[in-house]
Image (cartoon, rainbow, N blue to C red; front, side, top):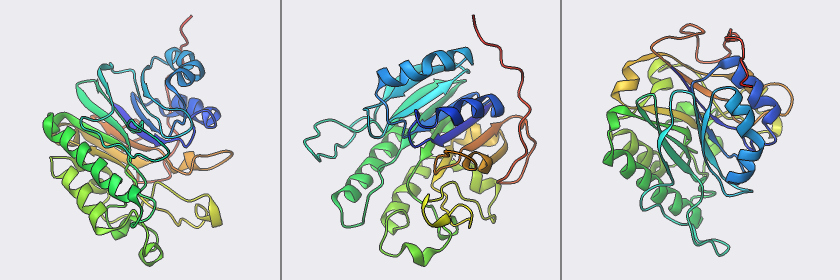
Length: 287
């Protein structure tokens, strides 16, 4: 099984990149974040194309902001949108939770695609909301079976100083604060493993590069897109890597996909970044 997570930063804008990428990499399960589409708009834009590729879809969207999805051709059962006791950030009259989490059972794994709140600044109410949201996510994992769980997505937290290009550059900013990192550590303490860092403990590896100031070309990035896997899937790791190639070219997302190969690695146990192209099976479209 190949599982991937990708913050596409607007699924409709990334359509010319996403569909060819699915054909190239042939992931079995895909967690998407920041789709920025309602459920109806996502279905109208993607359902036919994804069905032709063999994917069932669970999407949780709200329109202009947020939005998460799980695409699976390994089964898609027991779909749950949102988190139990999910906090609400009551800004602009909002009365319900954001569309930031969707969970489904895929190939025997309980997979949750997450888009963790940004936090904005440490003194912003959104930061306190971020910490409450992470606690609700931790409670979800702890209440289930962590050994068969995968939580994948944009965590908006760099786990350590090694996961940012220049730690002093983030002084006074979110993503690197002790409280955020403690909340992430509490999540992994339920029994989850950071599969990329476990495989590449001393490598420089990022998943996000700001569009501004030529950050990508200078490799001034952050590793904030994570695949956290329970004991069962973590023990099946054949490869774990970041598809930096998908961040290149025309109209990219500011995030690159993270891939987790279980049992076998179609591209081999390659380095943490800059992999060779996959050799997918021919695409067979349903009539």
